[in-house]
Length: 126
Image (tube, rainbow, N blue to C red; front, side):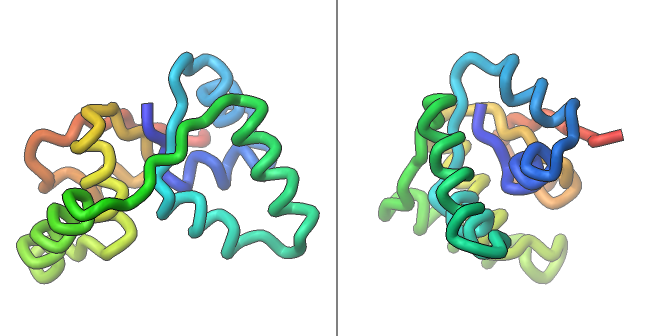
């Protein structure tokens, strides 16, 4: 399962259900985009170190952005930016999930619903 940035944010803020979701998932991955988005939210170097140690300890796979992901994301932005408001980060994460045929777990399923073939799992921290 590939986790959207929002799931990691909730887990990092101590939301138990987000932590349990991550812990109960056997194969965990994120897009390189998610890594960058999360690091941008860190307030100091210690938080970055804690985040990266968590990724390592839980054996997250970090999927890098390659040509096929970039190309597919550009097509999605071209097709859905005006009609559905899809943004670059979400398009790259969706294209990554599609390339690796992984279920995408997110709090913002509406951001991804127009994307054909994308398998989604919606999570709510409530």
